[in-house]
Image (cartoon, rainbow, N blue to C red; front, side):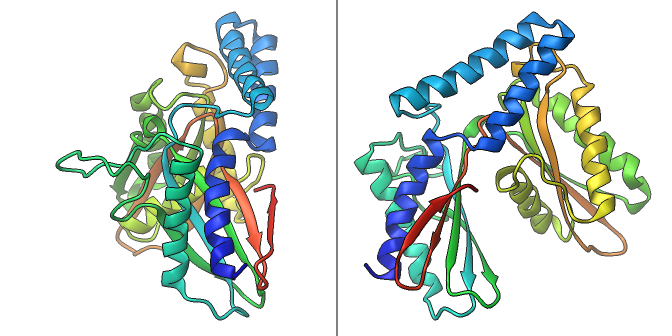
Length: 296
């Protein structure tokens, strides 16, 4: 099997795996949330989280999808610099893999033209799947992480160009305002991604990276960003929105912040929300076409 055939096969398999197998770190965070609600005595929030966890258990036992929303396919691809590969062919094979997953599993297709709303029936189309290519120095492998992005959570995406004078307080105020505006629509408890700096489009990309591809329990290596993550998680969970917006102490499972340096006269802040499922799946493809699936 060529490396491109392996990329296509991995793309198909990752789409299906991400929809069926909730990552271990997300499961652990949901368990912690359940214990917190049990200790707080909030029976409604406890029951919601218990139902979520039971939903995952049933999907495991029946080997089926966790949710009917199969999302839009989003890929993060890191190419080893020791490989000589065609980036355009990689993108093409990722697309074909998504089409195969949709046809062969089969999966519900969500992709439509933004004006005519005409469906493609393939979960692919103009600009879809969304693919972010990056590079890993000195390796001869390709890492692919796939995260299907559902409508409820993706609809709750925000961007604001803050003034530098707004400072840290302005960032926190904006993020909490986004949580209140989102309410129950992104299916809390959520994974909240915050992108800081860069240009407006970079901030949005960073927010998506933070919500979809970070492991719950990880901290940003920058100490200032890590401190902001902790402060925001505390503030968001103090809103009391709780699981499914019905009240409780677990509005967010995690807040992840990613950042880039920015212009002296502006400060972009983006928020992207992932629902409680936190779906993602990972594969590593070697130069000889071998595929290893593993934790993301």
